[in-house]
Amino acid sequence: MVTAHTFKVGLVSWPVGHSLSPVMHNAAFTELGLDWIYLPLPVEPSHLEEGVRGLVALNFTGFNVSVPHKTNMVKFLDEKSEAVTQMRAVNTVKIADSRLIGSNTDPEGFIRALREGGMEPEGKRVVIMGAGGAARAALYGLSTLQGTSVVVIDVVEQQALSIVRDMGATFPPHALSYRIASDESFVAIRENVDLLVNASPIGMNPHTDASAWPDSIDLPEKAVCFDMVYNPLNTKFLDRASRAGLKTISGLGMLVNQGAVSFETWTGEKAPRDLMYAVCLKTLNNE
Image (cartoon, rainbow, N blue to C red; front, side):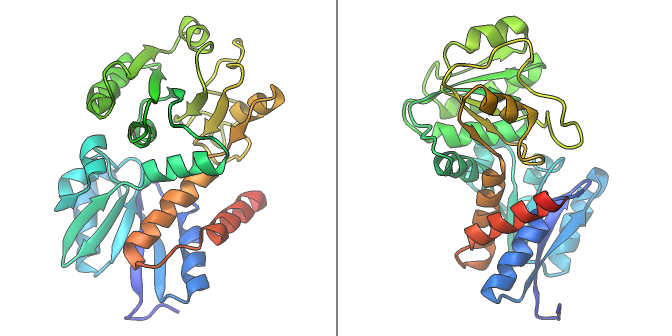
């Protein structure tokens, strides 16, 4: 039961859609006996500043930030982490004394999901398909590892160039580069990749018949395939990789792990990650 003493957090997005975050966080609050509630908070882009100030006025403890607000939210922060500064994107905000303190839990969620899935990314050759906010999170996480090199591939050259320019300083010289998506590019990179990541929304429900990797080109031999899309759990990209005998990792682990870090940032309590994963999995299977 929500009372005047209930701590309030939520997800600022437009649209909020069928996010699993409310289900995941509210189950965790219940499990730990915390008087907290996580709410969906749809905020139109043109009303972002008013929405944020409203959350401060309503005594929210914090909130998550999702598309399309991750970049625009940065300018409203009073304090930001190094990850937010480097990525120019925020996904978790804590409100303390009316001050907005921003961090980004996606990089940690990404790296932890890889390791839980049996992939150690340190020192590996990585290809990331997509050059948006999700790719920036993956790049920042990978930049903290030794000896890792990354190629970003995207259909929009300006977007690919921008992400390499913005994130390049976090990598050693020549460890980060980009290619424009074409058959020639996919053929060239498939011979030299240990980890292949889909950081685009391609393949997400309801467009489940699409894949970021071209149907006409064989997948890289021996590469681990990671898809940040988690709905459906078994995307066309992952299904093809699995049938080719490649190791696959779903994006659900990243969702849960980044959410767990947000949970701990707000509450100071250790997040029940196993429960959060189980609740998300059950919800997806029932949809």
